[in-house]
Length: 318
Image (cartoon, rainbow, N blue to C red; front, top):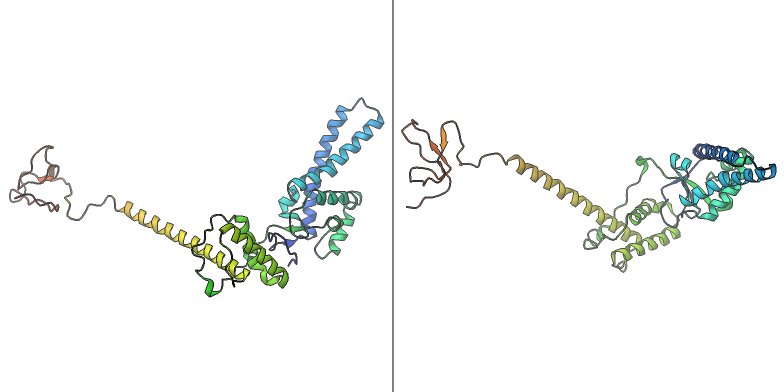
């Protein structure tokens, strides 16, 4: 398990990438960069056919630096450590403190990559990655970066610990609508990994996350409540609200489906039209022995000459 402690609590559950996955990602990146370099070289050869040898050499060096060195640096800077190969393998370059890399980190990695990857065909990078406990090559050591795994099997995810019983339901009136998903993720990852952190580091991280959560909700952390317990209680409150929302939606759907299923059934005691019943003419005035206008009237020849009107719940005037 990684001993990486992040400043943003966003990679606590990730693991340092080892040599096989990094080698596969590097092979994909080199294939893409090599194809781009070949295309650029062909285009430059056609465009600079009339230049002398010195100019061709200068253009070739510039194309090499631009595509094979500048290209990976630009991609890592703009994607915050996710090149095409790393994205395909589920890897990402981060700082030692867990934050996203900047241009200077990508520049140092790219410059060292020319020496330990391109000039030595990756031999130096492989040896350094095997010797390093966290699989870092020389470029990572000088830049202060680390390549981590972003995709972790779901079965290894730990459950969020429950809050203390005396805090359950205490934050029922808290407004959680302004809390972003990134902060929820950071709090959840801290709670699942807090027992693996150093005590002082875990305490400071809990204090910072609790402060951010209190700022988003607009209610300060209650006095005497530890930051870790406060985070667990608020997360528990959010999970309870989500569970209630799902339950209410399921009950509404079941009630709506039941009412639609009974919409075509006759009401108890209401007349049902059949082959032996005809409708009274519209506008006819019902008498004591007949039904209301529009109600079925017994057909001639029925048993006894007449059939008592069906009970409709309406009492005719005397």
